[in-house]
Image (cartoon, rainbow, N blue to C red):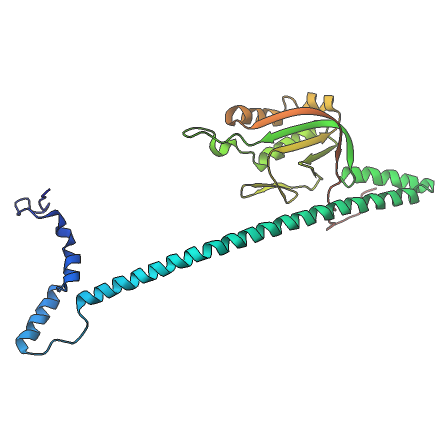
Length: 289
């Protein structure tokens, strides 16, 4: 195929490979700048010897060879570093799992020590009428602060991300469960009469935060993954009656219908929620009489 110059339609046709003239001149050692050609002509007319140096074609070839060697070395270095990176990643994952197991073991030990301490305190307070009164006040305060385990009947609300969307369709990010969804759900259960709530076994307290970090949902700054089981202890019939049709229930129903999020409610009997973590006291003041 032969084309014409756009700026001069009457110009003679030029070959399609004319744009390769620059590279051809480079490897052939031809001068690329007219100024260089003029200087060369003046030098030849004056009779001065040509400057000594390496042939231009050989210089270009040497540059290309050096670039090739550098690229090959970089590729070899990247290939050598892949097994090292994979090994380091596997070692970090193993350390994370080991630390998680250690943390779970320490949490179980903490619960045993806490139960033993509670039994010893109850025995000491039961020796006097004043002690028994104080014990009742402590029990009520501990229950309100989620400092003791809680057992009883209740509800379990399960929410989970929608199934992965098919090619060319699906709900996308709308099919994920976000931290604000769990916040609304938990607040709805509190309002429905729940006396204790846990998310995936993580007990909630009056100061518990439900937040997100990237794609992870944090409950009391502990990352959780779906499916999310929100367990609420309380009168099941009363909670079902109060929660059904509430703002939280309507929100979850809309997410279920529009984005395919899983949303289920069932009654449970004899469920047990663990005590929450130890609260850190930062500020205190005397209560009004």
